[in-house]
Image 1: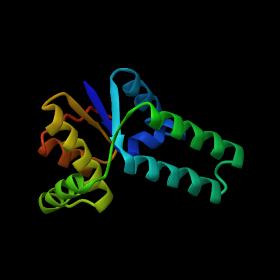
Image 2: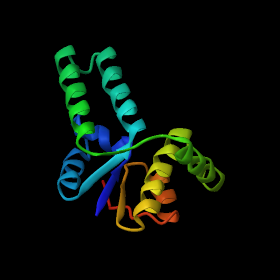
Image 3: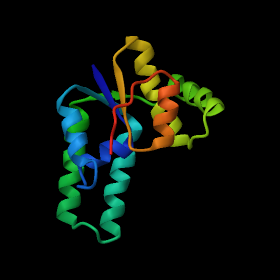
Image 4: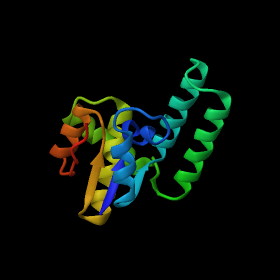
Amino acid sequence: MIRYFDSSAWAKRYVFEPGTDEVMRFGQQASVATSRLTVVETASGITRRLREGGITVTESERMLADLESDAAGILLIEVDGYVCRIAVEVLRRHALRAGDAVQLASALHLLRRLGRGIEFVCFDQRLNAAARTEGLLTPAVS
C-alpha cells in the first residue's frame, strides 16, 4: 500500500499540532508519496511561521533540512502537463482550490499508474470527500 500525503498532512511532520502523531504513524506503516507541490507548500508554511515569530531561525533551518531530506526518500509526483490536465478535470467535478485540485490529481495519477492500493491522507474534509468520490481510500484522521 502507498499513502499519499497532501500538504495539510505532510506539514504536520515538521510542526507539532493536532494530527502529528497520526501522520508519523501513517508514514511508518506504508510507502509514502506526495506531490512536488507539497514540498513547496510545506516550505512556505515553515518560512511563514518564522516570519510571524512562531519559530526561531534555527528551528526553521532544521525543519527545512528535514523537509529536503524526507523529500529525497519518498515518491514525488511531478506537477507536469498530465497532472495539470487531471486537476482541471477534478475542478469540473468538485469545488476545490487550485492547489487542492493538484494534490488530488497527483494522487489520481498515482492510482491510475498502479491501479490499486492508494490511501489519501488529508486533514481537509472537502478534499477528503472529493478523494473518496474519485475512488481513493481516505483513512480516518482527527
